[in-house]
Length: 246
Image 1 (spheres, rainbow, N blue to C red):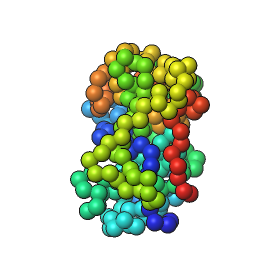
Image 2 (cartoon, helix red, strand yellow; image 1 turned 120 degrees about the vertical axis):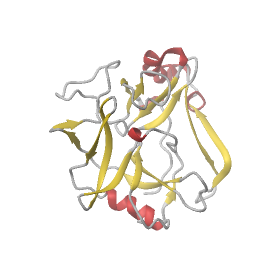
Image 3 (cartoon, rainbow, N blue to C red; image 1 turned 135 degrees about the horizontal axis):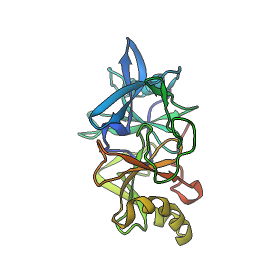
Image 4 (cartoon, one colour; image 1 turned 90 degrees about the vertical axis):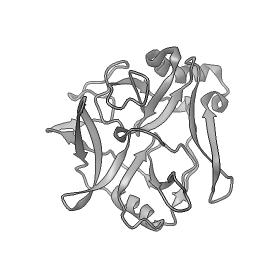
């Protein structure tokens, strides 16, 4: 891998442990894992079963930036970009996020012989309907339905326009979907599936690598709560793919 590049899209900071994947040593080998909540208070560490080069790419980013330990959390967004947070002296107290290529294929997990599905399906393979409980793993990128239920936004550290970019110290960027689309009809189409679940109070929801949207049924970050499937994003009424260099 070439010199790791700071990612210009959403940095999924301040999410629960259930909302991220991680590379850990399991049985003496680096493996992709995810914490899965079986029920309230009972969590299971699911291990990815198929061979993948993601571990090598993530560790290459880490070692390329001076992290000798390797492993740790990573994320996959709706564009299937693999994002790796790395803490360093230059990043200060918060990690910077780096691009580690695209996810090819799907991550595969299971619990007690049953597949843990990251697509909108029941364990028996039948389609999940909006409003039903989300039973799959919860890693995803956080977005917010604005109070009033009429817009979607995300917040992320602001970067300079340089190439490569630098992080602007203590500056946060809020990006609203309404300012991206400039089309009330498309905005309404994007907002409706989330607003149908969360209502006018708004709140956080997550989008995973399949464009699946799910949200905690109560306020807060949802740690330990049930999640509800909201639907799929429509890419024609969504934030554009961040620029990357493969």
